[in-house]
Length: 190
Image (cartoon, rainbow, N blue to C red; front, side, top):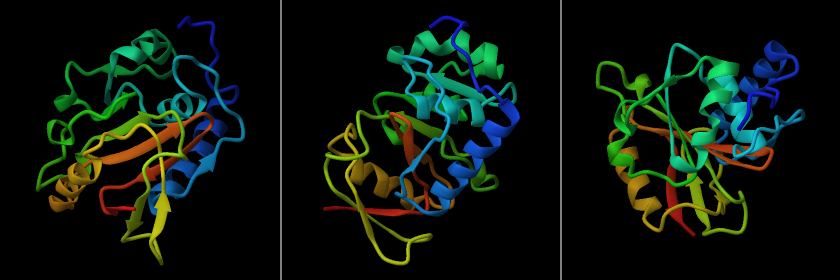
């Protein structure tokens, strides 16, 4: 990726708007939102690029997987991002394949809010294996069906939920849309 790819046109207003969407999705698990002004920055999808420009800066560390590694210079230029050396030390992970959640930093008992956030770039937020979400933020269970999750995702998520309030938050990004699975949400199959 070259630096010629623009970031946000109006960085403050667009980052604020995207941050409000992130907050909305974290408080309403599984709710899909679509960006009004997507950022084009391949190999990142517009949603992934916008979420990264909104959440990462020189104060936090980011780990990128190999398929997204061409984004380092662009992210350093637009967000001043700090590169994490491994998934266990990153505050944020951006990946096309979910790493084993047990290897990701889940915060501490004294500071559970320091658990990592994974930004997972998936092929689609629809058409995958059906998952039922329930818990805080949901009056009734809802069903989502994102593509690109590992076969053992529900089991991994159950382990993540067991250590609550510690844990990992997950943002699923596809195209110009994203949804969130905060660590507080329970997930079942079907």
